[in-house]
Figure 1 (spheres, rainbow, N blue to C red):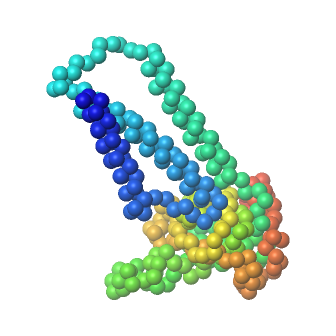
Figure 2 (tube, rainbow, N blue to C red; figure 1 turned 30 degrees about the horizontal axis):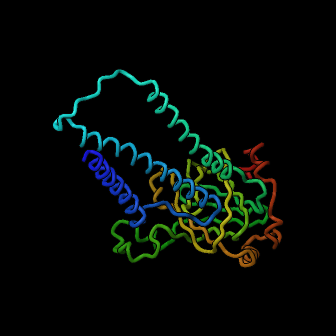
Figure 3 (cartoon, one colour; figure 1 turned 120 degrees about the vertical axis):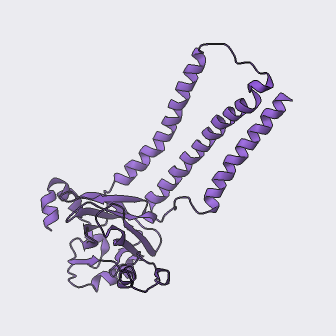
Length: 292
């Protein structure tokens, strides 16, 4: 009978935890898988760590509830009389270390992947301002400012009389989106002209701070054409909430055609010819990079 009660309690705890995990997915509260190599790596790492935590939770809380329910004093159970157990102390020290090593290996691989921008086919410089973004396609002569779209800007004003729910992509639309080619490794060089900003698009799988006087490097390679939205993720002033990011990914041929039609264009029509050692130059001389 005692063993049967232990099994029943254990199953109930397991069912409750699995129900909670299922609810997270059913309600759409899980992180997005994304459309880049790194975002998918981050998603897979997230799921691996999540299930490790679920297993640990089931074992720990299962043991705890079994002890509370079946070994309580009201059932006539008497506490064991001992001071310590060398074997138990070795086990509860060694097992967590092994679990941490198991989690550290894929996490380290993901961090190395995120920081490796070598082999980029093009460079884009992103500069944050209060409260807009400037995009520069390096060595092409193309640059422009991206600000909150006018319909969202009008609707956000006090006493505008406009219902924000009637505005498409309210506070997540811009007048000039960043257009990039798909299946192309793009190096992003992020800095700021005033305060600290943070350029963030969830589907790309990461975010990077844009800091005055410093150039942070990131990279992306988008596999699927489409429009991807994000926003500044650093509290950068009173209009922080009105600084969206919109990235439009186009097939390479369409992107090259778009780029050639932009004002000031002086570069090559071939995206692969845009690859430069810009990031290396900026690393050695940030002042030169900021002056470009």
